[in-house]
Length: 299
Image 1: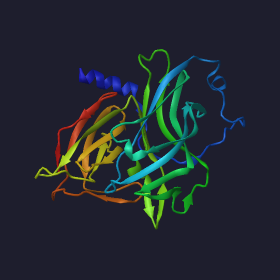
Image 2: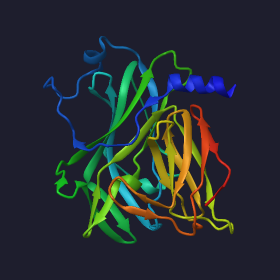
Image 3: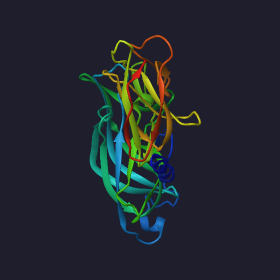
Image 4: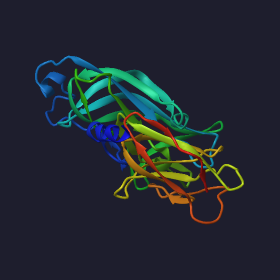
């Protein structure tokens, strides 16, 4: 039965792995701004429901930090690359990304039936910040020497999905902003270069990492690695040693613990309370929409 579900998963879930994506809102090559669905898909197909779920994870060793972003709205990227309105907020929806480890921030809406290649999140640059206690630090979007001055930042989450009447239930696309790999603190400035993941009918995997004495291993990086050796997504363990990796396409993964890891932004993350020696790993087979809890790993 599991094998049959797994084959179904490969047919249903087609998405991207992590990738740095940040830009101002791209201009429409037609010169007419965001185009109406009828000009993209031909005619006026009926609207289909969709849920977009935004997740994230903790930052190593910084439990009192908030990473706040102001979300102006969500757009859906058609297979032709055009952006269709999905959710538009009258004012920025303020979200602390670090709250989104065990639950998601959901965006519900409708769009014309058809094939889509991703979700675009529109972020209000001026209202985005990092709070350390009562101290507020504005976010600088980009990397040192290559920053964006755009008032609205477009963050693209590549992921293939189809909206249509044949769906037995409204599709759900999961997004992981992945603060762990997107933030760098340098010379008093906080840079954010989104390094994101997304999946349709996404699975997630979680568990705990403890040492041989039974104490939780904190700030250990946990990686979901596909059969080709690519890191599809990752997270770190919290104060109780727990972890959850979101936005995983169905498939077979090696779940690996790393006690020292360099993020995509060049930050080194070191685990606490890990025993000496090799870090553990295990295999996980994930089907669509599964929330798999693994046995405890001893590190």
